[in-house]
Length: 403
Ligand SMILES: Nc1ncnc2c1ncn2[C@@H]1O[C@H](COP(=O)(O)OP(=O)(O)OP(=O)(O)O)[C@@H](O)[C@H]1O
Image 1 (cartoon, protein in one colour):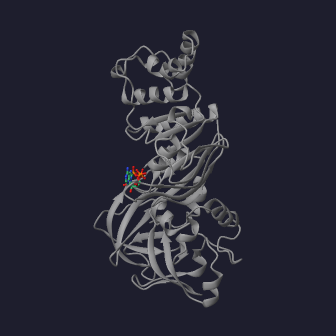
Image 2 (image 1 turned 90 degrees about the vertical axis):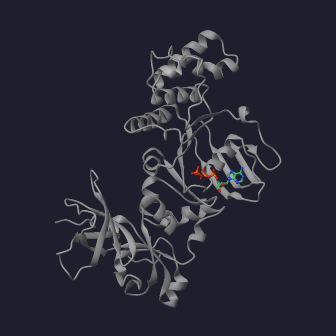
Image 3 (image 1 turned 60 degrees about the horizontal axis):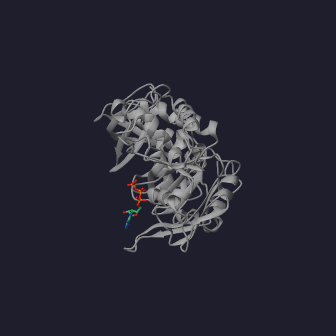
């Protein structure tokens, strides 16, 4: 329903802790945004600032061009026109579902007949038609959460804020509510900000994902973009379970002394331009090695390839199995298709690709002007991710071991 803008927003708590550090972010009308990041990265703080529970120490937050929050001014929570759903559905236990849902309209003085019609409509929207007469204790957890959702959308909020709204639900209910949430938001044209710990959920539901770390935006992008072109080693580690291997990139490729590992240059992509270090020859940094960059094969295979590693865990997956190995004291995650080793097995592991980030490059993409910076980085990425005009071979999908 509305667009949202964060301009260089800082939130510093009384004890001096900086929970948001110059966060700039634009959310388009009707867009679903997922906020992800490690525990303590500032997701809830960002959401609470938008809701009006926290006043920023610096910067401004606007909706549709109207400044709602600044260090000097804060529009009251109830005047922001937002809908909110939290992990624990806060329904009034003594009220029937329909009364819970209609409560915001009652507060707003909407007449009874209109209220009733809109409650019916909302119940239908969340798949609870005919259940308005039940009290919360007569509903399942998923149904109660849908009542909370119906209550949040009934007064056509400018923005819907979800804080771990689906996290307390079990699969497969959660998956179905996830789908319902997306289709309903799109049907109503809702702008949604969704905080979640669940990376798969963020990638599945959101138009764009905002990755936070230490109160700073590390990357903003669509699901394909953040997964295929993580802006930093941190993002690759957080979203893809990539291992970060320290080493040196030189003209032949990447070398990691610790593992005795060499990865040929043409197998390495580099999202950032580093012409200075390029000119200087070798470049120190880290290689983000995602599971699809780790080729695993049975130990008795071709000895010229890779090195022996011990299987630590081997999780069944419908499409690929997730296998973690210990290689010279490092843990690496790989994927296998068509065969699945057991924990304790010895296998051959080969790193066949990765994304190289020069030392210190993570700093460049974070901070207030990330929108512009990341836009520039990523605009050029599909054609020229290395930034040096060379074609890039990113080994996606061909990295799976088979018998
Ligand atoms: N009232 C407060 N006073 C001081 N520090 C706070 C306060 N509230 C939160 N913090 C700190 O701010 C940081 C960000 O907290 P926030 O709750 O936004 O993180 P989060 O990303 O939502 O974490 P989680 O995933 O664990 O919910 C944390 O380091 C937290 O300890």
